[in-house]
Length: 166
Image 1 (spheres, one colour):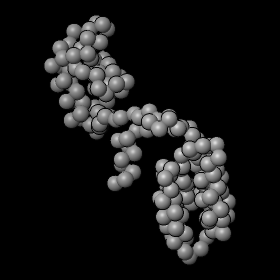
Image 2 (image 1 turned 120 degrees about the horizontal axis):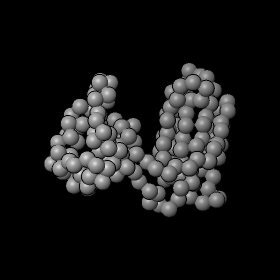
Image 3 (image 1 turned 90 degrees about the vertical axis):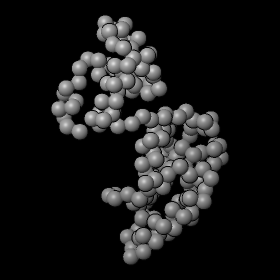
Image 4 (image 1 turned 120 degrees about the vertical axis):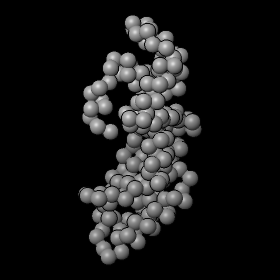
């Protein structure tokens, strides 16, 4: 998609994008009614054609679902790990990954480049949950340093999360 595509958007296209960004399930009829309130007389058929054009040009790449916390638990911890350099670094990473993937409450395991080698995110199910500490304890001999931080995950973009699995 070229920058020209963005610069050529008129006020109607911009408003359509704004409405869809707030709620991707807004019907073309509702968008037309909203545009009419702001002084643009556009039919719902025209809205559908414009959306199709915006999709084909790559300006609209897709739609996303933003989930609420279905479980009612929105406490998470991130464990950042700095691993000891060794010839078996990949084996250590694989061991940590295998261990974490067996946990019921794991959300994410990621290998990283830079100062930290790995990140694990787990959901905290109760005040007494010590999953993060168990991970650190199990692999303590292979760690130089670690950090455990509580994090607050409010929204998850399922479309983008699914890209991680490809």
